[in-house]
Image (cartoon, protein in one colour):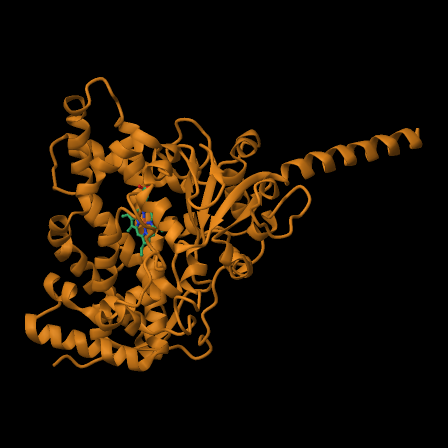
Length: 496
Ligand code: HEM
């Protein structure tokens, strides 16, 4: 009996080994270089090893001369593209071959599968076209006063928390600010995170984004092995998504009763009402889809911008000369325009450079992704990509490559000033992705971050809090976020 069991075990191991060897020969059979592969899991160990973008950086440095290299997520092959010229083709010039990202979760009809981020092909194109006008420069200008009002609240609330030389967690402050801003601009909801001691909205969003431990594991499974994720009955987001969905539904009911505000939700409702005229017989925009976009905006509008702001404030606190230069630019703009207005924000070149450099060093999204949608031959190679094949681009690694960014770890906003911009190689700065499927809200996010940072720097001298000189980042396979907040000391400045 023991002998038979041992034989069966050996046979099973040999079969798995043969199967594994065959699946893991995909890249070598196509002459694509590939880092050492672990049995059964391929390169999944890097999902669970500290910050994935840092763990993968050594392969970027080793293989970038090949323009791309292969990875395996379990048995699934992924092509990691490292060359900016090739990225330009995939993301822009030959975009029609790489329209999609991978499906996030696989629960048909769930709110998540209805979000723009999760839509494919023509459906994505239609939805994106409907949503794009929300972020036109006209809309940005008209939203400016709302953002400015929230930024004033941010400054007063932060200074209130800084009394008696108390360090302030600016990640928390910026999270409250971005939640109040997106809720107000997108839905006309006043959620008062910047005055409540218990900011419910911001706390729910924070919980949603805290991908640690079991939650990170479930999310990884949902992305990499969605069928197994569903089979196991896992649900990553129930409570938080439901909270925002309920809010969006309630708000939509009010709008149907005629309470129009000219904001994002109104725009979506109008698009739904006129859908039949635009595309007879083609239903893209059910009520469920509409709720999904509302929730997406609340969620996407919260963490990325709050982290970008937290990283910016850390950088200017670390680099005192940059803080002085920034304050000087802003004070001159106030002198010229009377206050920080829309035009002043658009003219503030150093402010823009500070944010661009922050997003180079700390891009909240660290690895980009596309799915091949039509057969495509990678130019100057024999490699053919087929529909369904996955490509990724390691934007954090590109941002930290000394070939493109001399002294890549140094914070030098000057790189982005007009006199130096000419030497930036295109497709080496990708914090918002690039091409037709880039971040739809880039303009909104930048304006929001600029107003908040400008108001803060005009109101207070900021310094790193003692004992918090080094900012730690969360271990994560996905988003880059500060680990324990960003603790700063704020000293109010006298107004002239
Ligand atoms: C500093 C802040 C932000 C950063 C760094 C950021 C970054 C990104 C990145 C890297 C992508 C993927 C782009 C690609 O694949 O090429 C993306 C997509 C997206 N972002 Fe942002 N984002 C920010 C703020 C926002 C805000 C405020 C919103 C909503 C109000 C938003 C909504 C979206 C949506 C809906 C998509 C998916 C677009 C599509 O699939 O068509 N983002 N963002």
